[in-house]
Amino acid sequence: MSDNQIISVKEILELEASNQKVEVKGWIRNKRGSKTTSFLSINDGSTIKTLQVIAEDQIINEATIKDITTGCCVQINGILKKSIGANQRSELFAKKIKILGLADANEYPLQPKKHSLEFLREKAHLRFRTNTFSAVFRLRHALTFAVHKFFNDKGFVNIHTPIITGADAEGAGEMFQVTNLNLEDTPIVDGKVDYTKDFFNIKTNLTVSGQLEAELGALSLGQVYTFGPTFRAENSNTSRHLSEFWMIEPEVAFADLEENMDLAEEFLKYCIQYCITNCEDDLRFLDSRLANEEKSLKKEERSEMGLLERLQFVIENDFERLTYREAIDILRNSKPNKKKKFKYIIEGFGSDLQSEHERYLVEKKFKKPLIISDYPKGVKAFYMKQNEDGETVRAMDILFPQIGEIIGGSQREEDLNKLSNRMEEMEICKEELWWYLETRKFGTCVHSGFGLGFERLIMFVTGMKNIRDVIPFPRTPQNADF
Ligand code: 4AD
Ligand code: MG
Image (tube, rainbow, N blue to C red; front, side, top):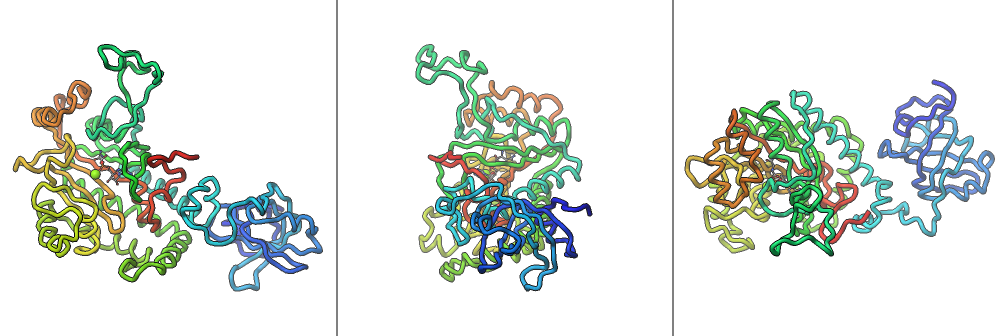
C-alpha cells in the first residue's frame, strides 16, 4: 500500500492494523475525552460503523480540537493501530487534522442523541448523516441493484417508459397534469381548455404506471421490466402512500397468472436474500433499532418476530395462495366481522378489501405473505383478463405482514373484442389508447405482469414504519419540501 492512501472508513475497518499510514475524510459523529486526549468518532457513509480517532494534545493543537464538533467535516492523517478497547479492532492515531467544514454547535441540529423520525423528516437535508437513515439508504441502493441483477440474470430487457404521457394507465384519474399553458390566461374554445395550444398539443400528465408501454415491449422483446418513478394525485395521507414513488413493472409474453405469481414470489425472495447476504451490518443495526422502538409499544402491538427473523421467514416459506372468494369467506366468518369490529363489514362477493381486512388475513389468519387472486372485475383495472365466470378477472395482489399490498398484477386481456368492450363499459377512451389496442390486433398473445411498490419493499426490509422514511425526499399531499 502506498503511503497515506485515502480509503473509506469501511475499508479501514477491514484492514489488519499494522501501524500503516492512512488518510480518511468524513464527518464527526461524536467527540469526547480528557484534557490530554480526545476520542473522535468519524463516519463517511461507507458503513454503519464509525472509526475511532485518537487525538493527543501533544500532536494536535488545542484550537483545532476545540473547533471539532459533531457534524463538522475533517481530513485526518494518522497511523492505524490495533485497538486495545473491546469495541473496535483498530483505531487511528491522528498525526494531522484538517477541518474541511465547520459545523457550529449552537446551530447544527443533529446531536449525538436519539432524534425522533418526525424531527428528522424536517431535516431531510441532513438526515442522511444519522445511523438509521444512512442504513436505510444503503439498503435502498442494494435493493435497486438487486432488482436489476435479478432481471438481468434472467434475460429481461429494461425499458424506460415515458414519465410524461397522455394515458391514464390505471384508469383511476389520479393524475398530475403537465402543462406549460398560462393558467391565468388559458385558451378556451367552447367553454373548454384548448389543448391544441398546449406544449404537446394534447392533455398530458405524469405517469401513474409504465405498464401499458411495458406491454408493448413484452409483445416483441418477450421479457421486459421498467423501474421508474410514478406519480399519483390520490389524497391519501397514510404511512404507506406517496405522491411520487418508484415502481418496478415486469411484463412477460406467454406467461399466465400462475407463472406471474411464481415470478413475483421468486423476485421478492431474491431481493430480500440479496440484502441479507450483502448488507449484514446495516440489517443488524435496523433489527436492534426496531426492537428498541417496539419496547415502547403495548405488548399486543409488538411484532412477533424481529426484523432479521421476519426476513428469513419470508424467504423460507411458500406464500399462501388463495382466491378472492376464499378470502371473502374467511373474512365474512371472522370474529372481527361478526362482532362488527371492522370499519367496513364484509357482506359478500363484490366488496373491495380494505387494509384492515388485508391485515387480518396476513397478520392474524395466515401469518405469512399472501397472494390473493381472481378479484371481482368491478374493483380492478380495465386491462385485466376476464375469467369465464364473467364476474372476476385474473388479478393478483401480494400482501405482506406490516405492509399490506406490496405487489399488484394480472394476466392481461389479450382478446381484442373483450378488451374493447370492457373499455367501453368502463368509459376508457379507446381513441387515446389506439396503440395499446393494436397490439391485440397484430400478433396478440397471452401475457402477464405486475408492479412492485419499491418503497413498500424497502419498508419491509428495513422495518421502517412510515413510507416517508425510506425515500430521501418524500412527496405527499401538502408537502414537496427539499
Ligand atoms: O396496484 P397498482 O396500482 O398496480 C399498477 O400500477 C399496475 N399497473 C402494475 C402492473 O401490473 N404492472 O400499483 C402497484 C404497486 C402496489 O401494489 C403498491 O405496492 C405500490 O405500487 N403503490 C404505491 N406505493 C406508494 N405510494 C402509493 N401511492 C402507491 N400506489 C401503489
Ligand atoms: Mg393495487
